Length: 266
Ligand code: SF4
Image (tube, rainbow, N blue to C red; front, side, top):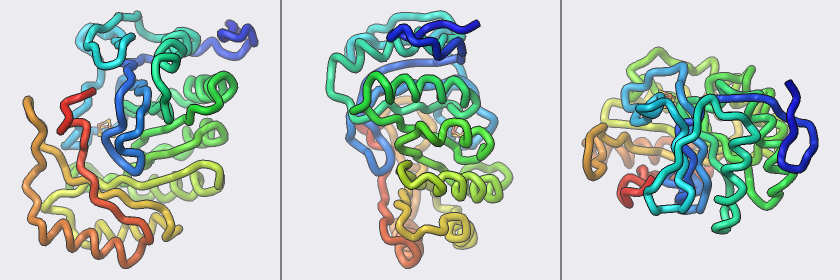
């Protein structure tokens, strides 16, 4: 069924399970501190040991915070149509100046056709707001759908020392090479590290990331726990050695922990 977006042009008709929509500040990566709207999708194809994201809301509905920071939520039924999502984004965008809309998860690329339609509508109706994709960086086939309408990609390279899963290096390589075919799309890499991260995993990153100008963010692993966030113990000497190793190969290497957890905001 073809339906209309808010401008009356036939575009959409797609649905996806969305966990929450809220306005806050980015807590990770090169855009840390920037005002964003977050759209968090349900489900993921991976099982990272450090994952702190529920795969669905307890009631399965989409929780929307209509007034940023107030904590009160509206519930919408899932799956959410692309039109309904755009209808939620519009009043949030009107309440503050936002740098971008972060599509996160779970793994947002599981819903790549939905993303493509929503990103197109955002670029058409809100051209000053960037489309920002936070992804595990493991599904190049799905990236192909959305790359032409994606402004920024925050791409993980999953290190087995922290995920406790099998390496995804071949998928990361294909994903990175595809992302680099579109120069208009900004790309940076996020590495979750801990005290067990060995030098050969950093060597794998060097092989995958062929452009030495690609920013590399080292994000020390946060402990999974209730209450104030704490980093998993990581000797400073090890952290600085990893930073120095990567800085020999890449022009822009930064160590940034998850700051939104320190602020205890969404
Ligand atoms: S890719 Fe992200 S959402 Fe998926 S399991 Fe890993 S940390 Fe969790």
